[in-house]
Each structure stands twice: as C-alpha cells, then as structure tokens.
Amino acid sequence: MNFLPRHWALCVFSMGMSNIAVAALNAACMPIVNASEARAAKATWESVTVISPNNFKMEAMKVGGQHYTRMTGSKNWQKAAVDLSNAERNMVAEIKSGKVKLSKCKVEASETIDGVAMQVVSYSVEMAGAPAASAKLYIGKSDGLPYAQRGVNMKTRFRYTGIVAPKP
Image (tube, rainbow, N blue to C red; front, side, top):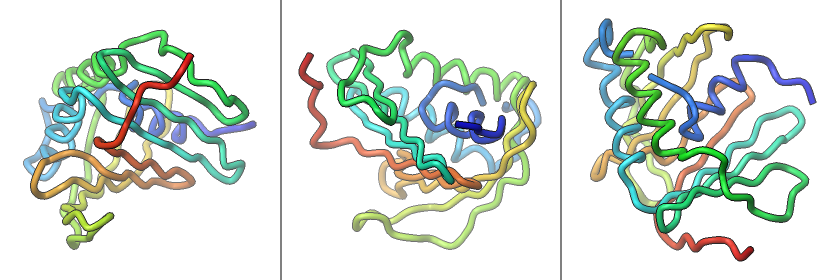
C-alpha cells in the first residue's frame, strides 16, 4: 500500500506517535496541544484510524498502563513496542520547541459527536521529512479530550469508555 508522507504524519499524530510546537503557536492552536496532553494523561483510551483510498486501518489502545496496537489484516492485538502516551507527550514537547509546527489554527463551528458537544479546530501541521498536512480536530467541550480527527484521506475516532484489554 502506498501512503503519502502527510498521511503517515497525521496518522502518527492521531495515534500519539508524533510530536507537536509552542514557541510560535498562536492561541487558536492551544486547544490542540491541550487535547493531546489530556489524552496522554488518560488511563484508558482507544483510537481507530482509517487511511483511504485503501481503507488501511490502525487501532491503538491503552488499558491498565499497557498499550496495544492492531493493523489491517491482523485479528490479534499486539503489545505496542513503545509507550504511546509518552510518544504523545514527546510530540507536544516537539510542538512547544518549534520542531513540529502547527499553523493556520482556526476554531470552526461547533458540532456534536455521539451526543457530545465538540469544539472543532482546523489546523496545518509541518514536520521534517513530510509535506504539510491539514486536518480538523474535534475536542469535547466539557472534558477537552479529542474525539475525532479528519484530514485528507484520513479519519480517526477516539473513545475513553467501555474499553477492555485484549485477550492474548
């Protein structure tokens, strides 16, 4: 499967494997940084990312301090090789340092996902080795957590309840 570097950058960001920039961040970008920090701090979460046109699916979860991943074609979950929450924290540090650049942040119209009111923020992200990518992050108004992310040929959904560790 061929994926453009921007798809990998957004996907890695959505899974918590990338890094975010504050040195030159404007206030409109801070909800993105804050949502990443809030998710990294959660004890339990799950994300499902689908990259089209091939519908390549990547799933990740954190339960009981352990991270798991599963890709298209695999029925079984694997223990993640890295701590995805730490990777997300590292991404935030990279954004704050300016190594990864968030720009064009704009608060969009509010939306609702699964009955939860969302603040929608559109933005662009740039990191070394990948072209700039644009996306929208859907952040819960009451808890500041990300619930969805959409970019060109990429969709991610996050959830925080009803998650159980996979059976070995």
